[in-house]
Image (cartoon, rainbow over all chains, first blue to last red; front, side, top):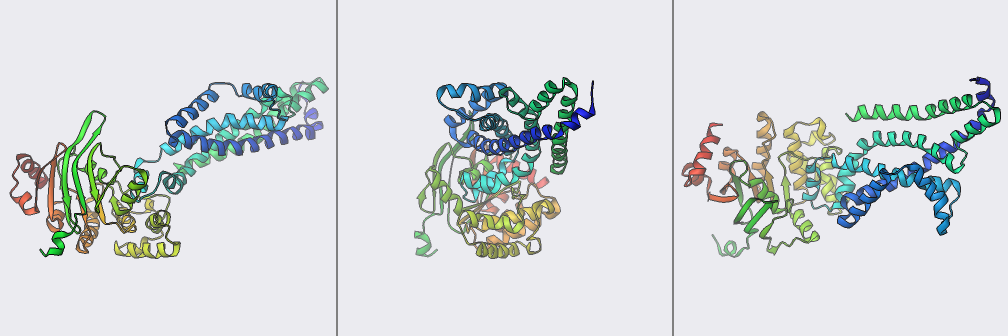
Length: 214
Length: 252
């Protein structure tokens, strides 16, 4: 049966897991955003070959489970000599995965800027890079924030996949408490509440940004 | 005409220019040239290729075939060559295309700052002068979203002038502006013409053409079908298609 006392007695333990979840989310998100911007730009402006390679990457990631990537990086890469500790392995996998989603966020934002904007930039003699830097990207900034916040909230949830490589994130800690107390129900509900406390403000923020952009 | 003028090179020579979009040929071999300080008005029904023609002149639309010689140099489609060409050719668009994230002043200063690497102070001082010239000193710190179409278009003109172009292209500059504000933009263009700016203007504004144009070029279906002074073309059009177009514009 559900017992508040189990949650409260083990709160520090759960919060330690929440801290891991949050740290992993933030680190992965930073790398995913930078890589996503780069991949998105290369996909749009890198020419035919680079465009095809980045498209292949984006579609491959979108078409496979994130968990698969985590398992490959943590269990399969060591077989070819690439041995990463838990946290970096998890962060790399999630960043590689989310970079593909975020590349698409940047692509659709850039494509939503009217063509006349880059034409005007070009007509002043700007290069493609200058037009992007001074005219196009500053205009996409407001448009990418709401979808980026959504990706951030999704990433908070997806970090729970690292329980599969025995990383002690929020979900894994909850399972440990369940095993220790013979009460599975309470710690899982506790974990759910902590996940909600983390994701809800992010999604609210995204929604209010969306309204502002409109 | 004195000898100095006679020997002066043409600013722009367009030779047998073609432009296709896929299998659709929009410009079917257009040739003309123009001197410095000359003002040319391009007219014709929609779909005649006049907008595409001016967009080819600064490679916003790369021509499919033909030769363009600008300021004595044959233009080749290498990237740096095209960029230098665009620095020397200002363009004003039908939809203004001002940069919405920047103030009027920043819009005008951006080209010199980024492309010519002018110092910020100098670029902004000149941008202020140009805004004064188009009558928008009081709007320097406003963003395009707070401005009327006529004001946005004048910012766009100032932005193009900031690059000190040798030629200004106007692609239907007043077609998207409320009727009562069109004169604001035309006044600025007349002023530019009076100062000796070389201009190619795509427009249906007959009054402007009569007042300013040295030559009117009439296009239809991707070809130049008639060219002459405004009075020649407007009062004694030789071609039937010119006559029928003009009768419609007169009525409008």
